[in-house]
Image 1 (tube, rainbow, N blue to C red):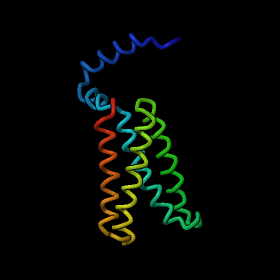
Image 2 (cartoon, rainbow, N blue to C red; image 1 turned 45 degrees about the vertical axis):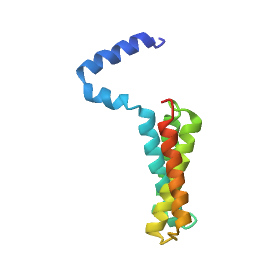
Image 3 (cartoon, one colour; image 1 turned 90 degrees about the horizontal axis):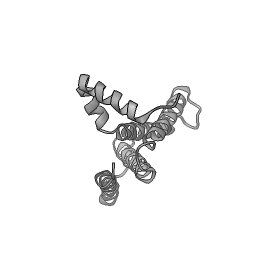
Image 4 (spheres, rainbow, N blue to C red; image 1 turned 30 degrees about the horizontal axis):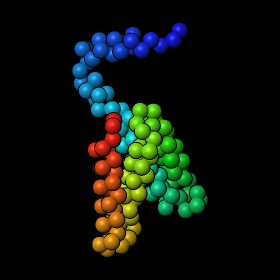
Length: 135
């Protein structure tokens, strides 16, 4: 039996009359929610690479596998409704900026003005992509 889009929309509208909070959350666009989750998982994935020491430590290696798969899985869900270029750029940008900031705090990496300006430019680019996205 094929899905009838009109029937599905009617069912959603009826559901939303009953459960408005869920519908507001769905209205935020689940693609963006998935993309935020994918970006956060990407940061933990990159961090776990530092700690697994070439996959010689079990727990960090498991974290690497789980967060890597989770990040890709959530990105796949996000690009079902978001433009691929926008989603991928935001995913990589948030991951890059997040891991750079984590490196400053966790690994005492340099905090020179050029590094901070570069991180700021990545963040500005990510925000710009979100603001000017059609979604």
